[in-house]
Amino acid sequence: MANKADIVDKVHSVLGSTKAEAERAVETVIDTIVSNLKSGDEVSIAGLGIFATKARPARQGRNPRTGETIHIAASRTAKFRAAKALKDAIK
Image (cartoon, rainbow, N blue to C red; front, side, top):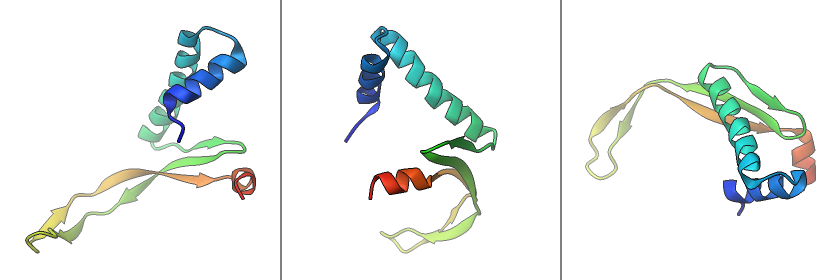
């Protein structure tokens, strides 16, 4: 499993810049995606996929321990649709 530090290391090795600059580059990409999702916009990265938000309506749920009915508030969640190139690459 790769994490953010692994991505920073890969960017650092490809660009040949300092590790701090590679980390800033990765942070900038992540921050841009998050800020666009917060404002309700989609983010499309060719060859990777589309990041978008989805509205979840309020609903009733159950506490599994007590069986008591609870109210689950409406919320927004992030979703990702993989591009065809990504799907083909991992087959």
